[in-house]
Image (cartoon, rainbow, N blue to C red; front, top):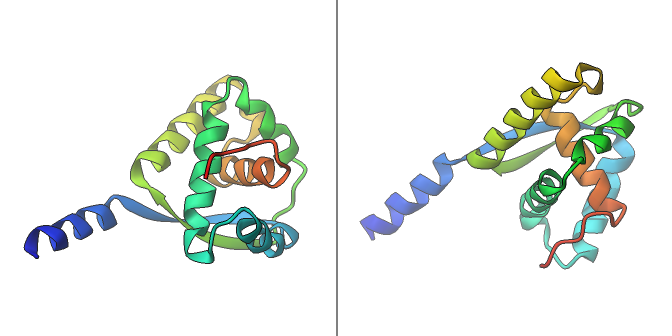
Length: 127
């Protein structure tokens, strides 16, 4: 029993809550898409993390940030993201900021781009 509790605590400590700025239209359509993709709302963060990982694994993914420059977020949502993915997002944001500061690479813009791409069907994951 103690080992299971320790493992649960370890898993919980390696996950961070990330607040992401989103347009209200995206926030309201997200649950419908998540459910349509065969996930439940308790798996919302899993769906988003899969989208992030898939986006960042693509060569030239930075181009997805161009469309994010036009978005004016007026809402927010919170996702539970593994620390390793948060670190990956932060590293990529820093790298892009050095190479092309005009893309305004932030945690929110990268996560928003991943969500948008998955919503559009441009990111397909195996569930």
